[in-house]
Amino acid sequence: MILQSFAIFALAIAAGIGLIHLLWESNDPWALVLKIFLGIGAGLGITSCLYFVRLLLFPGQGGYLLIQAGFLGAVIIALLLKNRFSFGGAVFRFSISPIQIVLGLVSIAVLLTAVYYSITFARVTPHGDYDAQAIWNLRARSIYRSGDSWQNAFSPLINRNFHMDYPLLIPLSVVGGWNTLGDEVLRVPAVLSMLFLFGMAGIVFSAIACLRSSSQAALALIILLATPGLLLFSTFQTADIPLTYFLIASTSLLLLASHQNDRRLLFVSGLMAGLAAWTKNEGLPFLLIITVGTLLLFGFRRAPAHLPFLLAGTALPLLTIALFKIIVPANNDLFSNNGLSDIISKLIDPARYIPLSTHLLTELIHLGDWPVSIILILFVYGWIMGRRSSASPAERFAWSIPLSQFVIYMLIYMITPYDLEWHMNYSMSRLLIHIFPLALFSFFLFVNTPETVLNK
Amino acid sequence: MRNLRIIALIGLITFGLFATFKNGMTARARWDQNPVSKDSVSKWEKRVRPALQHVPDDVTVFGYVAEWDLPGSEYNIIDQETEYTLTQYALAPRMVQPGLEHEWIIGNFTKPGFRDWLDKNLPSYEIVEIGFGIFLIHRTSQ
Image (cartoon, rainbow over all chains, first blue to last red; front, side):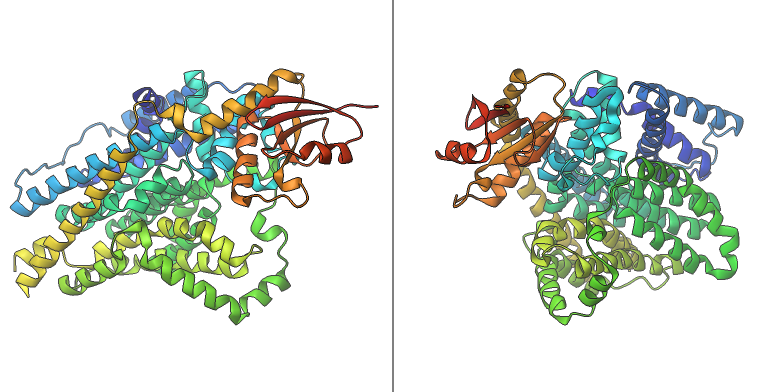
């Protein structure tokens, strides 16, 4: 059933890969690998936007496969018209150093263990974790089982604990999968979780390979997929790992756009940022961060030539979100009972900073559930290896994106209408996992590669 | 310095491999040949969904009462929240709202004494025991 559940998304993923290849002309081998992993999210994300529009316009719930096929057909026609089926200029070199062999073998071991872990948990917890049952899979079930009356899944009579305002990329992908298979197959949400986990790992690997070296990329992949907390969260069938996927996709594309001075990559970066917002509400502040980041990275003078590309990329997801907000005018729980004066008084209350700092420190020490603090380990590793002196401004800038997202998360805790201790216990480890792959990506862009050290 | 860097590199790889080994062992310990029969969510669905056989098809909203409603009752709030959520998950797309306001109500009680509370709070009702502490309560007009 797992393979069948993968197969129902194959056309969307193929269309996504084709779209990225259409927009990004590089035929560098690592760029081609990166396009495959970027295609997973682009394909699934765009299909989910189109499927939502289809649900609004026509009765019934069928057509998910047809949308994928139409999307793929359109991409193939565009690729043919642009003559982008040839990979002329792609140079594949097969000289492998001993360090690459070692890191390659370790990476394969880590990857296979992560696959085994994901499949095991998909079998023993087929409904995911509590939040999947309360929000993501509940929404998918409610829509799927409602048939033509799918909008009843957002009735104001539903208890607000179930967060009606959360966006629909994941639930609608599950609904589309179930409609294609003709049944509520439990493996569908599990397969989506795997696609986004390994897609994210693939982006981290191939983007670092593009920007630095394959050995450095393998090191990042080993640490990422060995992280116990990340693997565990990926089995929860919530939208956290898909969100993380889109954050790293958008950020790596922004850096590559600056690196290659290619504005079409900004378009794809905007698309990924928009899809982050269509995945989870935490994607909305990220959209702001990536817009400001583009302004700062390209400079205000060059902004008129670059920013429109980024914003154009966000158009489809933002339009879908706008339609969703019209259909489901539910307020966000963080702001519905939280007036401006409440927010200000919480922000200036020093008593709230102490528990926040204490809890944050504990969470950072245990980040990712590593047996020893991964931050400490990476700090020592980075200190010994030294930082890269020739990093481009974009690579040096990479730190500011996870840092900005982190600051926004901390501000949310400061103003939360919930009991602060409860809210932090409930969500902080999850939110820090959103940022962890981004921080890891920035870290491995920042420190010296194994080759630099071994060749000295 | 070069040697120290090589040690750091080997150390990081070893650390990653150690965590991977632990992840593999965690997964191996969880592996089960027949996992669905032991999954708590699937079990809860099997307990709650038979209630639907006793209600008309057009019922879209259920009430929900449990130990947390009984005055003086001792309960674990996390368990109660989880069971409420799982009940909503099992009965979707029908809505499940805490309280006695609806004609059809799911009762989730493991301790005796809830019938006295129901008698006090509902003027007239019929009750069907579904099993495993799950009850279907039908408010009737007198």
